[in-house]
Amino acid sequence: MLNKYPMWKNLLVILMISVGLLYALPNVYGEDPALQISAGRNATLSTSTVDQVRDALTEADIDSKNLVMENGLIEVRFNNVEDQSRAKELVKDALGDDYTVAINLAPATPDWLKAVGGSPMKLGLDLRGGVNFLMEVDMGEAINKQQEQIVTDFRAQLREQRLRYSSVRIAPTGVEVRFRDAEVASKALAYLKQNNQNLVFTERDSTAFVASFTEQYLKEVKEYALSQNITILRNRVNELGVAEPVVQRQGADRITVELPGIQDTARAKEILGATATLEFRELAENADVAAALRGIVPPDAKLYQDRDGQPVILKQAVILTGDHITGAQSGFNPEDSRPNVSIDLDAVGGNKMADFTKDKIGKGMATVFIEYKATGERDAEGRPKFDKIEEVINVATIQARLGRSFQITGIDSPAEARNLAMLLRAGALIAPITIVQERTIGPSLGQENIDNGKAALMYGMLAVVLFMAIYYRKFGVVSVVALAGNVVLMIGIMSMIPGATLTMPGIAGIVLTIGMAVDGNVLIFERIREELLGGRSVQQAINEGYANALSTIADANITTLITALILFSVGTGPVKGFAVTLMIGIATSMFTSIVVTRAIVNAIWGGKRLKKLDI
Image 1: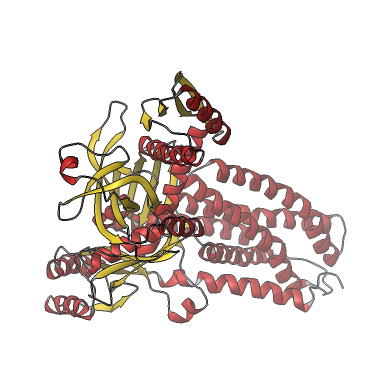
Image 2: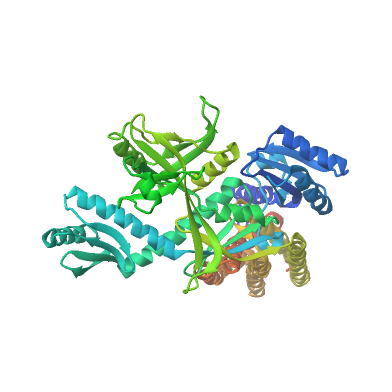
């Protein structure tokens, strides 16, 4: 029978619309103004901290909707922004400087919706308010780190081949290797050339040569530093649960970071800019400390200081770096209840540690904490300058062969242990970064943008609804119902996609899609009119109208989809947001304009003997 869907197809349409409605529903509940409280390096969160917060709010007669401590944070929800703003200063004064009190927006999604994975759309900085950082990566330090690794590799390779060298050091033009004997230098050059294809070797004289990066390898080092820093920045923000970050590359050496909903920048800057990592080095036990303090240090060693300012001499060769750390948990030593950090290594790191410690039982091994801090100055090339802080946090005697798991001690406080464990879990930045631009957008401005976007969406829909209802009468009402389903599906899909963020350009994409959604129905309805004028029966006209318009609708939408894909692939930030909503809108509008309207038309007019059609 013409114009009749089988039951399964009608149920499938109802199911898809219902799923879209379910996952769009969390957006109706909105978000609560909230405070997020975290502990600093010298503090801990406990039930007494919760009581302090509650007492401070009670004394000021501020009502809170909810006050809970979970995942290492305290979250306080309020009924309005005014109470949130007042409470921030009161709680900050009550807790002191050891705690960070940040303004946030917490989803008000009911528990039953959360249970099925429902969550509201993530709003971009221009809609929600928050913080935007533009960060610059110190590519000079990334190259320097790679050169240091080459120095270590060269020394190891030459020792394996029993080729005695005078020195291997970083020179202005690359890594310089010197020998006492020209014949040994020639053998070493041939061997290193064969095993280091990414380097260009230039002879200085018969006993020395310099290894420098090829242009391609230099580019790869910079690309790796940038991509790894982006990954680590994402991990750090996720680790703390501050916000869902938008972290994107900008240019050759810059990264833009958006933290929607965050108004307190202090903690965010501390997390993002931290460059803490660890290095494990062997203790130079036979070195003369007094001589080292006078500047006489063995060529294969380096002078450090511990946390009490005492000198410690360690060997230059690095046993292991923080790059091999896969897990880190803070805890306490059972013997003396002092804080520690339990370290887990990857397979490569575990093998390196095992190979080193198997022959070093009874020897000393030091843990070096390394951090880079921006000086605020720039060099002649305009790059930011950093102070490299290296501190020995403990020196331990190797009691047994170590593997992929072990502990480090010598940490001052539980808060410091937790902070160090968090940074190590998230990863150490490949190269230091500095914040070159900081921008804060208030929630009131974000709300104004949301209101303007809603108004644009409402007026656009109203204009389309009036035109379709007046011009196509009952069929126009059918398209309006399908249009509502299209908006519901778009919001539901945007809410389901992990990492999808709605911005003002995204709202523009939704508004544009509303016009495109009814465009398919216009083509179908005009085809039906043509078939009726050509003398076809009502049922034949409906069937032919949908069948003949399908190819035209597909062609029009595919060309738009190609454009959206190009925008997504070459665009950044707002352009990508527009492209994502446009692509989703194209898919949902084709479904609603063809399948949903056909289901409704079939249900109302299909299979009936009609002389006339109100279209």
